[in-house]
Figure 1 (cartoon, rainbow, N blue to C red):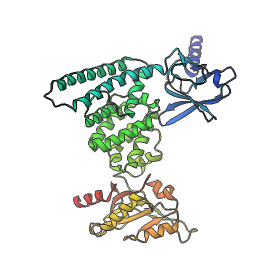
Figure 2 (cartoon, rainbow, N blue to C red; figure 1 turned 45 degrees about the vertical axis):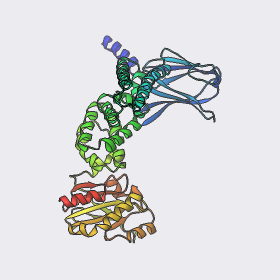
Figure 3 (cartoon, rainbow, N blue to C red; figure 1 turned 90 degrees about the vertical axis):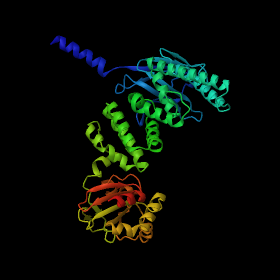
Figure 4 (cartoon, rainbow, N blue to C red; figure 1 turned 120 degrees about the vertical axis):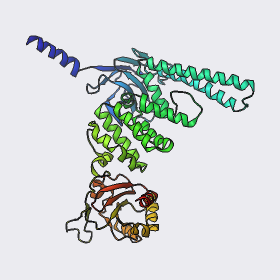
Length: 450
């Protein structure tokens, strides 16, 4: 029993109260208020807010909830017009930073115990020298035809730079410090891949390969670039790769590699948000089963509510119709399996929304064609003013248009997890969602094939 208590005490002290701190000394900034921030995926967590004492010495402590923390941090002087501060990597253990100058820079800031910033600058400078040489040589080769001897010599030198860059990437992988893992993430924000090439499409494919198969999402989570990288990757998939099947394969690779539920939930949330913003509901449908079956999503909130509420193959939520003529009366329910039509197109829109106006004009232009196909149009407005709603709805060729004047927070928008307008759902006679439609052109293709 005594041994168990001793073991418990050791675990209690070492596990729950792990101490991690950064000793700071900045006497020229005495009396200044500051924030100390660490990065957690989409969030910036302010873990310390305080004022620098008269002697300039203070300690930044990582809360036990995050310790031992390895990742990027931001120390900011607040409440002054001049501002200032440091972005620096934290290695998972204690170190110290000091500077006696009123104008801190890379030459007068001293790091003890861990080279937090200068190492990253050295690595970046070494990398940039190789890239600059490669790009300069590539520009020179454009001035000569292949039959010239100088062209062949330059090509040999380009190959040497490619080899040097590959060797540098290998060095980064062997370097245990976070800076060496952080630099390739920064590279992604600049469109720099892990292998040198002049071909734009090849660069894009290499970036995609790095994101899906090589990059640590644990490192990305604490890098401060989580959201930006995810958005850029979605844009790359949609604008360059432009292949839904390839997207599903790449998503599956990433999905399998993110094991932390908090990281996974954050990733899916941002991915879904950007796919929705780009009008790619069909991409969301394509990964829905993998997301729902992953067991790694902590909460389906915000844009992620779509996975539970209005996916293809699900029964469409009933529509709630507000009685605008008599506010005292209760709302009525319009069951989606009793819409009395072969197909029903639910259009979520907002007056004055440019893409909505294009969609509405397209539906009006092909209205007779849709009628012959048995498609009944039901529009749900996000307008908040009755006059605006009436002016727009009066121009529609269909009769069923509803509005509760609560904007995108209205019950129907919530039930269908609609984050942006226009959004369209195509239902069959039983109220089952059979397609999520992004454009009228997509609806026309579906109409032609069915």
